[in-house]
Amino acid sequence: MKLPQIRNMASGEVELLIYDVIGEDFFGEGISAKGVQNVLRDAGIVNTIHVRLNTPGGSAFDGLAIYNALVQHPAKVTTYVDGLAASAGSVIAMAGDEIHIAENGMMMIHQAAALAIGNAGDMLAMAELLEKMDGQIAGTYAARTGKPQDEFAEMMAAETWFTGQEAVDAGLATHLMESKRVTAAFDPKVLNRYKHQPKQLAAMFVPKPERRHSVDSIAARMKELA
Image (cartoon, rainbow, N blue to C red):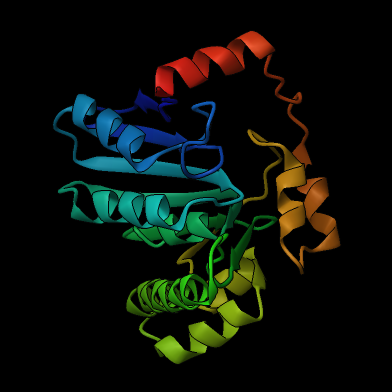
């Protein structure tokens, strides 16, 4: 399991770096809710948590679990969108008592998606689950901004991308930060799954070397999971 980076700052303050896909994949890559809980537990008693985000999103359930872990933590939480907070990443951003986004940063909200295999009943059940998930996510944005849930449901259906200033205007962020250039801790190709990705998005990232997994590493991971 990959753990998010955490470092001590001033007395009683820690910085949590979530620069990856949300949710653990087959190879143990990605930031899981369990990983976040583990590092927060090991950090001990803190009064301020700074959460820095640059993520294309991933697992909606992990995103909600990380959001809830931060909201329920007794420390003050400040979230920072350094580059991108898309999908589940935008949900995590909502956990901040303050939400900062870079001027050249972006946030994206959309409807939940999943794969389903089976008969018509299985497909209908999955559709019902996705509708419920959309309601939970839209409700999270509404609770943070004070705006109607239906408004966010419509924006999610349209896959809406916000610039830094637009996120502030929509109530999804509270502060605009100075622009910065960040290194992508994920393969930017993962963003191709989104239908309305802005053309300028790729320019925000310094590409990270492609991850490669050997046959031996795949076999070891399968043995670990067995």
